[in-house]
Amino acid sequence: MPAGENKVYLTFDDGPTEHLTWWILETLKQYNALATFFCVGENILQYPDYTQAIRKAGHTIGNHTYNHLNGFKTPVSEYVENVEKCGPLVNNLLFRPPYGKITQKQTAALRQKGYSIIMWSLLTYDYLENLNKEKAFNKIKKYAKAGSIIVFHDNLKAEENLKYLLPETLEFLTGKGFMFGAL
Image (cartoon, rainbow, N blue to C red; front, side, top):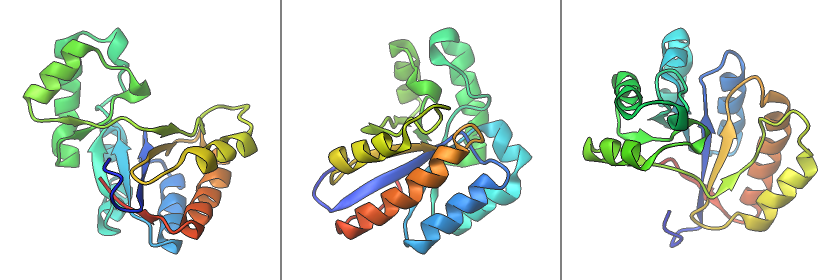
């Protein structure tokens, strides 16, 4: 993202997730932080109240496929079809490939349909079971800068690490004068 403003972009992949999405929304609200949630279609259908709460709070919802597909293991036509199945549920053309795995042909096909493919500049690795949370946070402190896109995960696998990393990140970046934007 352009580095002209002192703004960073927090993103959350995989949700919405029961209970954890509420916690994320409440934590963001404490800092007046906007974010982008790259949601999985089946999760949107399973938790429509969470999806509405994300929108109502002013956050953006992007497409993360309907079934969280790995692009390296999925034929182009099936992948594009799965993204488009999720499309009406998110109602925009922002797309992040699950696992960050997408082929050149899938990229070309989605761009031809108007999708903007959003990757990241900082991956928190919050989904790793044996993550050293302090090291992960130090990486955010060291590398976050204006225009950074930071990816967290809205899933149960990441919950323990997220509950440490998100408040620490918000507190640190706020203290450095950063604002938080939605894509």
